[in-house]
Length: 310
Image (cartoon, rainbow, N blue to C red; front, top):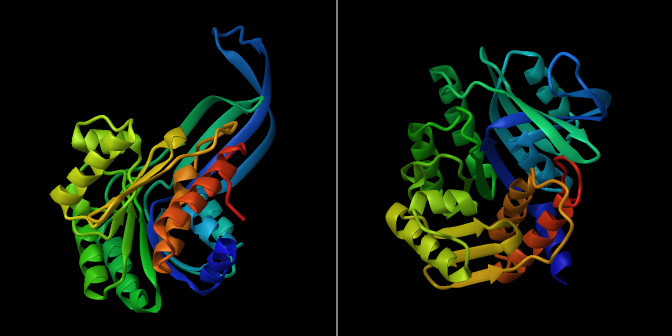
């Protein structure tokens, strides 16, 4: 019955997504010898794969589930940006507003041998977006918000979200009475004040509260501190293999994960964000929502590389 309700919710929900988008590259190969030039392995490339990461992975998860999604983002005027645009075109049940800026787009290239990462090479420019890009985001945000059920911000701390922009997006969402969910990477949680729901992971939660977040009780304490200090209505802490902890003024709910073989954790938080945003927009019971999010995350971490839930 829950899956039927969730499927119906996916088909009728409209999500407005803003965030840092990147290209996740995977190079698969083998190592048979050490280089004569230096004590390093010689990687023989055999196969490559490119998928969207960051906000792009949240976008792909939502569209894969049948959710009409409007994406607002900024990319660079370079080859990586071109690949990001090409990947975005594959999704028809969506709307995109993309600002092209004269900066380097973000990419992460992972080299893998027998499913294990040998090295990851990142390319990025974390400088704040320029005034034109800022105005572009605000313009389309104001134009689109009333057409959507929920706002999702995927903040990977790659330059899109200044404190000024975050404050404006949160203020407008609250004025329009549209829930706003944020996946944070900025250590300054003041920027997320007055949001509806925030989804920090275990490390981010510990850093912002200066407390351990290992047990359910510790997670509750951390969540309540974040809520009180930053005036955030709900906190969802993603705790990896320890599961999910949801805290608000009424209660605290913990959803444990089943033991599974983990191949790659990249993108699991994006999947949780997508599932929770759909459930939240449709008032699905929070305990059931956490169970769905846990199952979805368990599915993607069992695969190599950034992947989406079907």
